[in-house]
Image 1: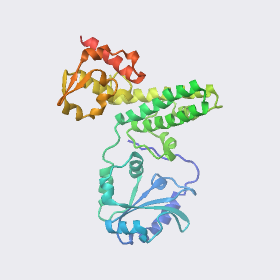
Image 2: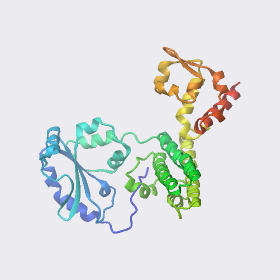
Image 3: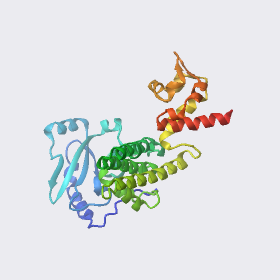
Image 4: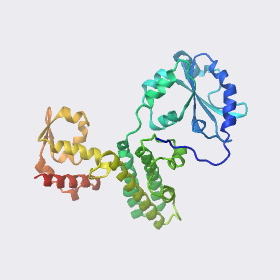
Length: 340
């Protein structure tokens, strides 16, 4: 599968930067305790200009990492100028990095990193382990909910209250979350905000008319009420297309939005039983969820069971719920009616 790539058309200084790095690399590898070096940042993604740095990660043995971290580094860390170019030099303890969880941005940067020095092969093994699992499309559920909350609920609030700039601030957040969801829809790591829009253009799948869509979801127009309404509609249109794509790829036939999937599945699990073993529930979700809507209205907790009262569930009035919960309850009411 093709990866997102840089499409900047201004002069690319990568070749000269790579030559500079090649000439200096032995200086880095000769330092005590260096067990691996990777090239990260824009240079690893194939583009550099006069505003770029040469981003390096030096992997250090445990003892040396402690010394370098405590003011005894033999070279400047962070941003520094060596020769003609800026470098951004980071150090890393390989053992600690292997054990800790990495967020999507860190994995995104690692996924493009180029190994410059790895005499024992441990950096390659480390990268393969960290990058073994690409994001699953279903992981966009939270992003899609947060996007919907910002463009629909918060957007409507500020349209009603008349603060258009605050409304556009909510759309800014919604647009960012929507673009991030497009990366997850492609099973790609979410890039740093600095690259988010640019790299989204070369994703294998994008909503129809993506370039025009980007302009619409990012545009504040003349900051009038009409501009906010138009931007909200553009975000909702693309949100719906991303939602439909993820469902088509992950759970064809699922009847709601992807942002409802966790709640829908949990409610289905409960409604398939009269008494659900507690351990079955806790294998998927914490008990605190049972105190939330709509679970609290039809479940009772005993020492080792969840008692499910389906009659109480069917008596819940969707109109009396928060709109997000209402959609799920209404759908499951219809499904239970069909089963009878």
